[in-house]
Amino acid sequence: MRTRIIAKLDVKPPFVVKPVHFEGLRKIGLPVDIAKKYYKQGADEVMYIDIVASLYQREILLDEIEKAANELFIPFGVGGGVKTIDDFSKLFHAGADKVILNTYAVQENPDVINQAAEIFGNQAVVINIEAKKWEDWYECYTDCGRIQSGKDVIEWAKEVEQRGAGEILLQCVDTDGRQRGFDIELAKRVVESVNIPVVVASGAGSLEDIKELVEYAKPSGVAIASLLHYDKFTIKDIKEYLKNNGVEVSK
Amino acid sequence: MSNIIGLINYGIAGNIHSIKKAVEKAGGTVKIVNNKDELNSVDKIVIPGVGSFKDAIQELQKSGLLDALKAAATTKPTLGICLGMQILSTLGFEYGKTKGLSLINAEVKPMIVDAKVPHMGFNKIDVVKSNRLLNDLENEEFYFMHSYEVVNYTNIVALTEYEGHKFVSSLQQNNLYGVQFHPEKSREAGIKLFKNFIEL
Image (cartoon, rainbow over all chains, first blue to last red; front, side, top):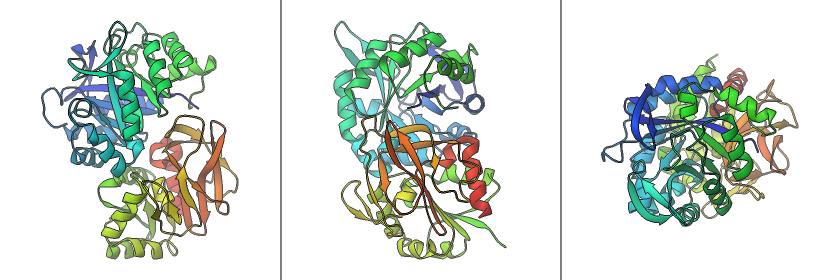
């Protein structure tokens, strides 16, 4: 299977920002421009997360999403503050192919996963897990690593699969934005505990980090943000490097 | 000759936005089809594909499109995408057993493979019988996003291999075409496929 290379945009409308440890935001640009740039570089997918919608308890803003969707001829996953089936529907109509869900499902109503999967199909429901490492377990956090849930990451991953989620986006509060490598143990444990695809984010600081993650944890995809935002490497660079090192990627 | 591509809109579950965009990028004229009458005024049909088999059939029934679509798909060139291809089959097994449009003798079953499901990402197609829809696309990669596959033996145009498991990635029966992948999500190769469809 070709490992997917996914560009992840954390958005604080109207800008793509880059949080460090999910805090301290830096403006990168407008979503439509950034999304288009990564599409042209050969991204396999783009993920767009409105990182403040849930925290501010407001609805996700559709304008920027629609503009970005118009530039993409690859899958576009969108999330942030999603609660109801109506939210899912609005996002699909704005051009999303997958809806990314975290806070509401883990903190309030996990049944929304079942409902959404039955209506939109499993493949359209992505669960975002923000993992925080404790001494001997990982805890699910929400609202950009601010709020605890008390739920165990591995147990939650299995539960969302049971409920019909089609994919997991695994982020890590401890490594996000630091560009010092992924938590590959966490990634491996989550990948091995479910049968649905797992996309791993949080930590790419070098091409070697990505290769190490893919070889060790075998995720279905890798989501990259900082490395791309700061023009350290392009998607094309990443794919070429992986290909030259025996990792199968799309062209 | 008019060449209007009718895009079937079946309620909340259809992802028509991205297909409309891709067909227009390929130079086509798109009309969103919400009911029977609108179906009469188009020249070709695209059935999109996001949602579950059961829900799709129910939505088509609700909008009164089910029988009209069944009839139109035998006369007008029709392209089913992902779920839109799957519902052309006789029977689907997603959330219980559901009768399909029964235009192609096939059943839709969960993928049985020793790998992650849904099968998600770019993958190659192996064209086993060339046709105009896949013209010049024989070596391209397309985006797949599915947990179910069409089981058919008589109308196979292309196969795709996922971790050692081969499944049907494209079907054809006369004017009726189906693709399991998402051309609207497959970069330039997908736009080319829509171009081929427009030129049919």
